[in-house]
Length: 240
Image 1: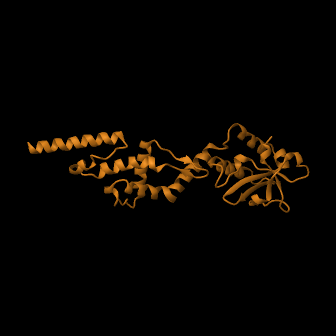
Image 2 (image 1 turned 45 degrees about the vertical axis):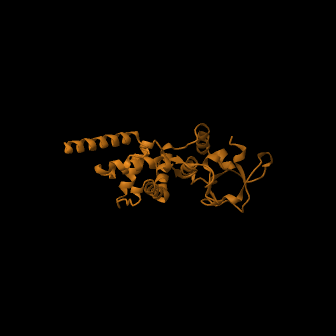
Image 3 (image 1 turned 135 degrees about the vertical axis):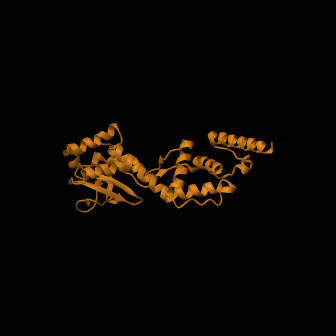
């Protein structure tokens, strides 16, 4: 039996719209006094908004809706602040075995389709990259060291993406579900990107300018020391 907090009374006129039922027309219902009311189930794991839920609920919602949207008595619910959900009429829940079995699966594991969830994560990572991550990543790298202030990435998108991915791996930092979008802590990644930029862009005869740099990457710190020693050795041979 679904949680009592998932049952709602529909107070609108006639039947709710199939593809755009207003969340405002549904009110939480006390099942003890529900006799004679238009009851609808709105499962929590198919519902969310801009301020609640996660990509788990977003994925569950679209998987469930795509599966059962042709069933009478199943309605897509939408509201303000990105609110979404599915409303299932009481008799449909009681009479549709496949639908009820699908919902019961969520009791044991709160995700209907792992592949869809993974696809959604990748989609949202791409959106976040285009919306703010790329811009902030470039800005933070430029501001991290005086010699990088004028850095202008190539028009080829792969330059920034490759630097970001390499630094992300070295920082052991991963994307996180942020309530329907994806978030990543750039402050953990940027120091590694700066290490790579400085080592790539600094000529051998100017390596001493990096003597006071604090390296985030132990690997690149060792590479710097090796390059510095190699420069000293070459200079000594030239002097001899």
